[in-house]
Structures are given as structure tokens and as C-alpha cells.
Amino acid sequence: MKLTVLGYLGAYPYDGDGTTGFLLQSGEFNLLLDAGSGTLLQLQKYLDPLALDAVILSHYHHDHIADLGVLQYDWQLNPQRNQEKILPIHGHTEDSFHFNDLTLAGVSQGQPYYETDELNLGPFLVTFMKTIHPVPCYAMRFVEKSSGKVLVFTGDSGYLEKFNDFAKDADLFLADTYLFKGNERHKAHFTSLEAGEIAKAAEVKRLVLTHLPQFGDLKLLQAEAQAAAGPQIPVELAATGKIFDI
Image (cartoon, rainbow, N blue to C red):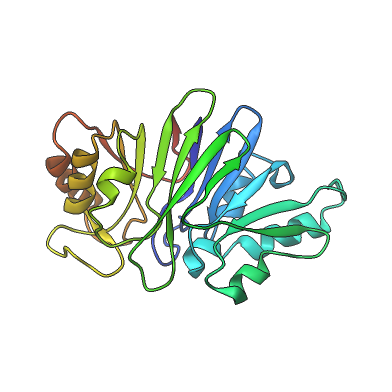
């Protein structure tokens, strides 16, 4: 399983880097995980967007779906596309307006997921956990069927103790870390301290901080998370183009 960072900032793109989006691959299967601003341009450096097998979305805030519409246009208008192939886009149904936009006739089809689901998605089994956020949002746990390797993506969330179980023994814990230590129990995002504490409690093997702020010392953010996680768990910052082999 391989994760390529297409965008890693929270809220809005800045200084040439985009917002949340990742390419998750296993074997020949290509999954787009969220589709923030700027991610389609980055995706084109690694993969023809027409080679995507599916898209899955944590929630419908613009910094996670801004490039979804232009991805649909690519599939609609690109003359090289196999016109019989429809792109499945997986999302929750708690916002019917945005869920309905996942379907573009003859191009893409919205596929619902629910918190109680175990979604069989190509080489992955995916389970879900509702997070704390101003709009409905879901964390996801991806288990690669062939290897048993685990990726947990928090989506956007404030602190929740149940992440300790949801992220248990993850090989890579991809955590929304938009805030520095001192802003704990925020209604929408983790702090560096909380990301590290959850990683430690869940005994993850690797912590990657994402949904990062545009301003402030990111090395300090990393150091704060590292201190909370302990020396046994490596803590890294997401960055555009960074690849993680899981």
C-alpha cells in the first residue's frame, strides 16, 4: 500500500501547496482520498486521472472537495476516456445536496457509505467513525486485504477518545493537526499534543501530521506531537509529493 500526498494544508491553498488530498494505491488499484484545492494538478504528475478506480470523501467542506468538480469534467470531456467506465465516488448521505453532486450522468456515480459499514473497496476493507466537526465528517480505517496493513485517516476532527481504539495498531496514522499545543479540545481539529497522545494510546507505528496550518513553525508542531507520542513512534509532516510506503 502506498500513500502519495497531493495536498496537506487546512482550509485554503498557500504558497504553491494545496489542501487535503491523497492518492492511495495497492497493486493496480488507484483510490483518491479527498480532493482538495490543487490536488488534481498534483495527481496528474503521478497518475492519469482516468486511471482512478474510485474516490472516497471524508466530508464536504471545500478544502476537501474543491477539485472534485473539475475531476468530473476531466472524465466527462477527455477524449481518451473509456465512455463505458463510470467513476464511483463514495461519500456520506447526511448532506443530500453535496451527495447528489457526486453523480454526473454518464461520468460518475455517488456511492453511499454509513458509519456501521465495512466497505469492500477493491483491495481494501474500509470502516468508518463519525468525528467532531461543524459538518458531518468521517474518519476511515483502511485495511489492505493482501497484507493486513492498516492506514487510519482522521478526516477533520476535534479530540475524541474513541480514536484510541479506532486507530489501534495502525501502521500509519494520518492525523488532522491544524493547531499547536495549548488549543486542546477544539470543536473541529486536533492539536499537536492530541495527535501525539492518541498515537501513543493507540500504539500506532507511524504518525503523519496533515491538514497543517499555513502559518507558524511546523517543526515546532512536529516536535510537540513527537514529545506526546514518545520516542518509539516516528512523527512526520505531510508535504506535497511525499510518498509513504505502508
